[in-house]
Amino acid sequence: MFAKQTVKDADVRGKRVLVRVDFNVPLAEGAVTDDTRIRAALPTIRYLIDHGARVVLISHLGRPKGEPDPQFSLKPVRRALQRLIGRNVAFSPDIVGPEAEEAVGRMIDGEILMLENVRFDPGEKANDPEFARRLAALGEIYVNDAFGAAHRAHASTAGVAAYLPAYAGMLLAREVETLTGMLSDPERPFVGILGGSKVSDKFGVIDKLLESCDTVLIGGGMAFTFLVAKGLEVGNSIVEAEWVEPAEQMLEKAKGAGIELVLPTDFVIAAEIAEDAETRIVGREEIPAGMMGLDIGPSSIELYKGEIAGAKTIFWNGPMGVFEMTPFETGTKEVAIAVGRNSRAASIIGGGDSVAALKKFGLEDRVTFVSTGGGASMKLLEGAALPGVDALLDRE
Image 1 (cartoon, rainbow, N blue to C red):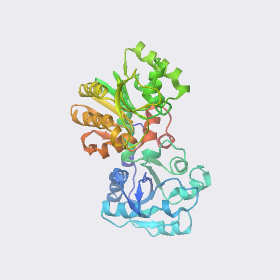
Image 2: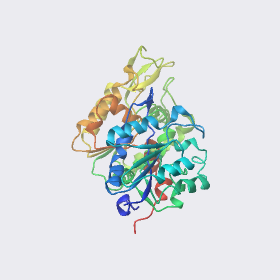
Image 3: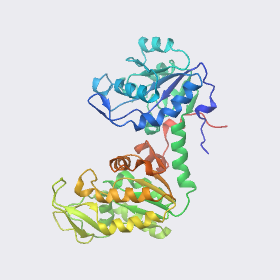
Image 4: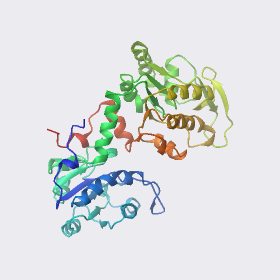
């Protein structure tokens, strides 16, 4: 059970409710190109307006340098939200100044106001107490629904909670419940799939999955650090030399625990990362000097598909290769298809490139749960504290 109080525990009618959302969405030519994160916040926003709250939305977008930058304005996001929610969304170009205060003061029950990008103020990332206090002064209740930013101790994700009663939004609560429940009580067999280029980014997650999974499948560039740990030559493939010894220890840990930590048996190799690269398939012990592995090979795909087909719980984070390029997309595509085909399993996708892969291959509707937070998902699974969650009111 989620240990924090949620928006449904608060009396919001007639109250000014500050809602931290994660509207850090991709833009092109002044328009939102992927509204997944906006849609994910709609249940909380709709609940609040249906219950008579005055909803003040706070979000960041991109990485501005602590000052206004038109390319990171939330105005296109406001237009996308209006279309999705079917009602007017007021906009304040101010974050905590007189203009924002006046805009909030004019609100009536059931209205929505979006503040400009909170990272336009340097006090946000610094978690400046004065900036957090001025943000809090705009509301009477605080709701954090930005799971994707919950691992950051910023003013709008953690600092504000020191000044207002602080609750979880529906999305944040569901994310935490789903991911922690997966580790504590999975239906078995439980198969974890970890990819991506760097072992260092996923080491803590792999270590934690070894405590819960029956099988862990490794793909992507990180596989080569493990193969070097097993004494293999991997040509020019990506290897994190300082992580070879920890990888060797992890292989021993898995073996001692009776957990299958499965590495690819073959690869698609090339001399360069390019759409027109000449490729060939070799066994993992046959990667020549000057060549690099850029996708898992057909034998590995069949092996991984078999493991996925027999699972009752699946967690996937990270691609099997450089899936953005056609010559190296097959491994990721086939894993995505296999996950989507296993309708008997609870399939949980841990954000980031795995979500991008599902979208590329049109499979996002075939899985059980897609996390909106890449970094936050990884931190939660590692067992690390999430400041944006810790700051909320405990459930009594």
